[in-house]
Each structure stands twice: as structure tokens, then as C-alpha cells.
Length: 443
Image 1 (cartoon, rainbow, N blue to C red):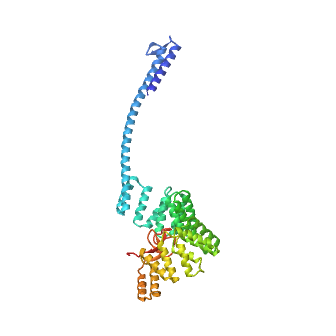
Image 2 (cartoon, rainbow, N blue to C red):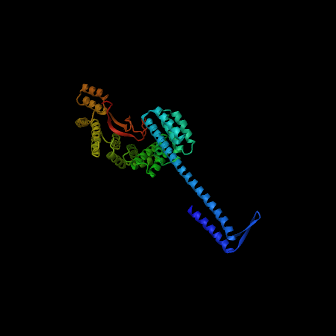
Image 3 (cartoon, rainbow, N blue to C red):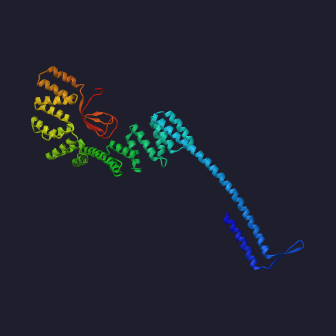
């Protein structure tokens, strides 16, 4: 402002000085109402300019005064608006927190109440739809979840929210084909989200699309979204199942390739090791098959591995099998009771009754009686001691003995006699682990 006033004054002085230099002695005759005045030309030019400039300065001062006042009023209004906005934000955040808390506690009525309050504050938005989805899931209204998901799928920027809800609702309704379609769409949009990777892999695997499942695993591994050890084990399972599909279609070469790759990826995965060893034994590569079984026996001993190992030498006598198993047992230091369990069975077949009794006794010191052990002892009582009462006692006891040589789901404890990639109870993938025995509930 000061700069402008100074500029105007300088301009006025400059104009007056120019006029003065042009005609220092010049006069301007002014006639009005019969009278005449002689006014110096300098004054005639200077004073009108000066008055004009003065008026401009006064006008600018007034404008500046009102501008400052308006600015102050706007600042005060802005502060009030900011305060109101902060208050609204705090109320909205409080409503979100209360809604989430109520959902977590399972109180959906209260959650609906807080969600209504939140909607009054912020209107329709993605957060409203997201919370509504959670409430509908809590109320198990999966049809409404699907409708809301369809709405979100049509809204730009909210497709993933809708796809996730669609996957969950379809899975709950056991509509896995529909869930897979949504998962594949989500996988096309984003491949850096854990829930996208997890659901797409699971649903492709459930649909026996093992090529597609491996594709998802490769993406997850490349983006470092999965632990390397978990990646190797999951890929080994996928290759194993893919190999079984090839075997059904009589594609033996592809079957063998899958089993070999699965074994190399995860040597502790017993099913692929057994199949790979079987393939080699059929080609009369007994030494290679023996090597495979010995390696997996060291890290993950199971009854089926010992059975497969002895099958390599099926031409041998039961007595030879006992001696061979005694050497094989030395490689298993992690589960010595399994050695006792297997040797007890082999000793009975070879009629090494004293050895069998010794294996029974050692096993029962460290473990409860299992169904197979009960049967073997009953047979021992009958054939060695000729004690039919003792035999019947053990046969009767067998009904309440622990289940042996089984696979148990680590997530829900479901028990299966054979390994399977998915648990029928909880849907867990690769959750079954082999156990020598599983006690009955309440035992």
C-alpha cells in the first residue's frame, strides 16, 4: 500500500514538473460569468492532477481498510468452521470406533445404531458400506451381503471391497464356483494383497486347478508375501496333486516329473516321497528308492515309510525284514516309539515272540495301548501263552484304545486315516500331520 501511494505522488510531481518546464511563464485565461482570471499554466495542470491522485489515494485507503476488516472476519469464520469440522471428525471417528466395537462384541443392534449416527455425519461412503457388510456378516445375512457386494462391484474404487465380501458370502453358502470367479477378478486387479493371494490360491486348489494355484504361489513368492518354507511345502502339495491328476489320465511321464519336483522342493513331504520312491522302484532303481525313503525317514518318520521300505525287499523272509528294520530304525531318533511299534508287528510275523514281548513292554512304558498293539498282545496271549481269557480281555480293550497310524488336522483336530490336502471340517490346506496314535476324547 505504501509503495502504491509513493508511486502516485511521484507520478503527480513528475507531471507537474514536466508542465512547469514546458512553459514557466505561461498563463491560462479562464473566463466565467463575465470575469477573467489569469492562472499559471503550471498550477492549472498540477492541481487537477494532484486532486485526482489524492482521491485515488483516499479511495485505496478506504478499500484497504474494508479489505482488512473482511479478511479478519473471514479468518474468524474459518476458525469457527475448522473447530466445527474437527468436532464432526471426532464425532465420526467415535461412531466408527463404537460401531466396530459393537460388531466385535456381536451386538449388531448397537452397531446398527452407531452406524446410523455415522451416516448422518458423513453421508453415504465406502466406510458406511464396509461397516454395513461387517454387520450383515455378523447377522449371517449372506444374501444381503451378496446384494451389497454387487452394488460395490459397480462402484469405481470400491470393487475390491465388493469382491472380498462376495468371496466370503459365496464361500459361506458353499458356492465355491461363484467365489472362485470373484477371487480371479480380485487377482487380476491386485496381486499385492494377502487376502487376494490366500483366497485365490485356496479356491483354485479346491477346484483342482493346480496350475492356477501354483501361478498364485509364484506371484506371492516373487513379491515376498509368503515364507519361503511355506512356499516350498505348498508348492510341493500342489505338484503332488497335479501329479495324481496326470496319473489318472495315464500320463506317467508328467506324473513322475511332478513327484520328483515335489520331493526336491520339500523332502519332508511324505506322500510325494513315497510316490517318487515307488516310481523308481518300478524302474528297478532300488538303490535310489532306498535312498529317498531313508532321507525322508530321517526327517519325518512315519509308518507308511517303513512299510514302503520293506516292500522294496518283498522277496525276503519275515526274519530278514526284522533284521533290516532294526538297521533302518537306527536312522529314526526323533520317534523311538514308532520303532517299537513296527518291530513288535514284525517280530510277531517272524515268530520272534520274546523280542515282540520286549517291544510291547517298552512301547507301553512310554505310550498308551493302541488298537494295533492291543491286537498284537491278544495274538501273543493266544499263540504263546495259550491264554484265551487274556486274549479276549485285550480284544475287548481294543475298542477303547487310542487310534493309531492316523493323520490329524492341526487346526481343528479332525482325524483321517489317509493324508488329504484339505480338511473337510475346517477347510484348512495342508494341515494334516501324521501321528503314531491319537487318544480318544476324555481319555
